[in-house]
Image (cartoon, rainbow, N blue to C red; front, side, top):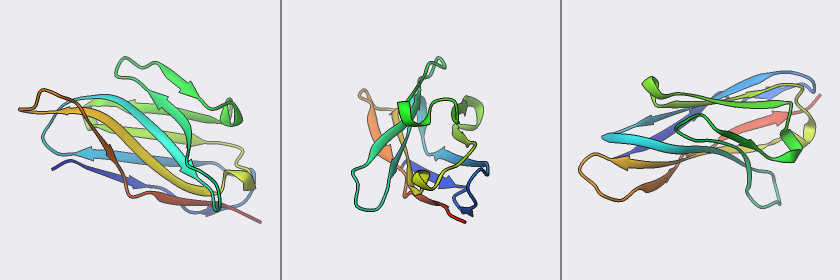
Length: 121
């Protein structure tokens, strides 16, 4: 069974920095794409940033230059460094991974449980 466990979400003031982590555990052969999504109250879930196995990164326009996605393949972990946080960054942040489990021939997609980030003075 594969599990994605996010951590790092807290209450911070505007302008602060924060780093989210998402660790993937299980019988995994390869993790392909790892993605951070977020969902604010009353809004649809949106893609924030994604990173491929080779390190190619993509960002939503609303977070470019403030958020940085990275991954540690040895630790099966993806990070989201968040700088200059704004109240509109308040949301539940979810980790998503497209991966291949050992013994299987097709990739699967898994979600974490989410971690709450609140930006407020």
